[in-house]
Length: 269
Image (tube, rainbow, N blue to C red):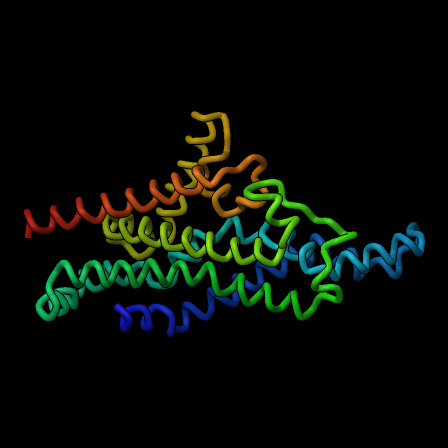
């Protein structure tokens, strides 16, 4: 499994997606925070106190972090699917899978391959965010100050953010890592059903989109959506149970698709 995980991480696609993710974080921060700071000095309708406040808040890492998820939250399922998910199908199509099964057995091969891809997807959500957090910590001029510029979260564990915002940032990294793993397993299952490279990138995203619309309509709430699971810090009244349910649904769907396809291959050869 370690070898498979290295293949997942140490390839150009992984690096490209990491760079794209960091760029998307930066775009959101720029449009919401840094743009105002760049224009503040030349603004004629602001008082000196107002300009000072904008410059100070734009240098607060918690404000920057708070505003950095808007763009990436729309496209991250496609980014996760674009790196290594299709390799499971690819090895099946070119019969490389048969060689690996003959060496280590079908069960071991499947488990190692799926876990490696899932962990790779988890790291693909974790690493860019972690790098960006380090970047804004270095960039900010008041990195350890939350007050008097209070940029609260109102989703999961808001008191923890107020008490220890740095710990909350670590919580965000951990939960996004788990979400990445779940989406990775889901995407593997869907890609194995479709057996199409283009569909590997598009179909998981479309299914997630349809699910988001359906579950919001049925429950009259967005709490069980994958979007809320990713932006749990800003989903008002969010609960850890909602996050666990979303992970469960993604993982179970992926596993069911994989079992169905594997049994179909066993029956039909």
